[in-house]
Length: 161
Image 1 (cartoon, one colour):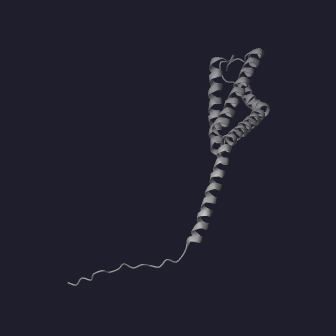
Image 2 (cartoon, helix red, strand yellow):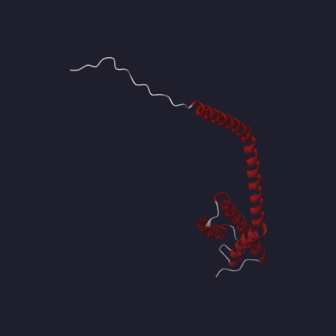
Image 3 (cartoon, rainbow, N blue to C red):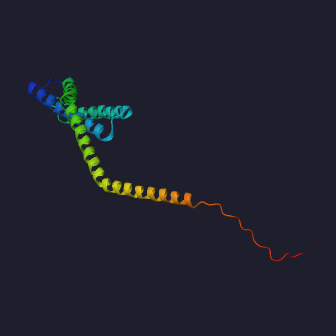
């Protein structure tokens, strides 16, 4: 059994893992915001985050920790960092993202309305002109309708074989 590391080394390792947990949760949140967070996608992102957490924890335990291996306080620090992100930053980030998206969408709608307005007005004028022409043509056509006598062709010669 390996000897326990000194208290300051334990604190340093826990702090490093806390930072890794914050970083991992932030990356998970960013992927969810950018690529969507439906039921299936959320499951996939969570699985990938858990796998990344395991890789990060083992990598940190093997390379930078004072103990040289994984200890319970490293996993607790990683979990605490993820929960800290969820409780402190995630809600604010999602709210900011929603507000930014709404603002951009409102700006785009105003720009679209400004670009469309002259053409809509022009289209309405053209439609009104077309309607008046059609109405005038219909009025003229009802006035001119008279019964014309059918003229048959004159047969000048009748040829018999």
